[in-house]
Length: 302
Image: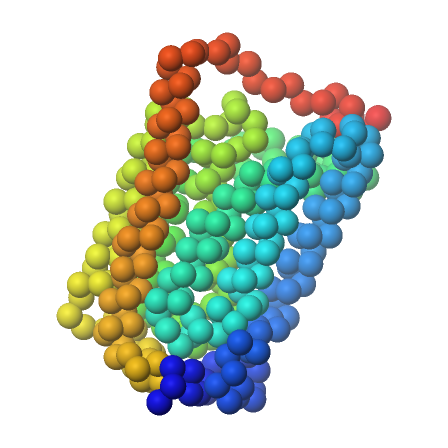
């Protein structure tokens, strides 16, 4: 039987009520929650960017590179959550792992680099901007930017959603599935913000950043190892879908574990190596630690 001989009925909550007769590449996820949210984020960022650059000049406040990062973050989320990747993720566990990697290790860091909070504030009036900005300066939000807390939240979110009961619920219920992806995205944005925040005073020390990434790679790799080497199937749902792809559910799970174990670990290692390189350069050529001063024109809206 060809790999994509059919799409299982369990895909109904993702792609609609009618099967796609094996043409999985046409099965896009027209989700009534995800699409409006992505459109809203894109609109707020675009309007905010136009207003910001109109006041401060193109490329000021945020750079063209940051604006490009936002575009690619949204594109990554479209690939992960709306494209046929979302369909295959219900059929194959290893694709589901790739989907999660796109959300957590590509879309989230790009989103952080784009400085979305700063830009989106400029989609509002001056009064609204001041009020919303004050909310982000309260102690509560800043607690979520503490490295130990964000590290623990990231690890907890990753592991808790791979508990079979919750994972199976996400596969079978659209709202739970959306909640899973939202949890992954928020936890990942907080995780990467500590390392990539555009304001240097809010970033973790480069040396500690290497440790932050290394320890994260250890626990995520451990989860991948457990999946890859487990003698039993963790998620019975895939026992009903993988046969159409000439795989057993256990083989599919082993591939999923390897995806989490090897490629994910490589991405963490690459980020840690890059951070280590800049740390060594910083130690050899120390520079005065001067936090960037926000553009007064942008802050006041004058």
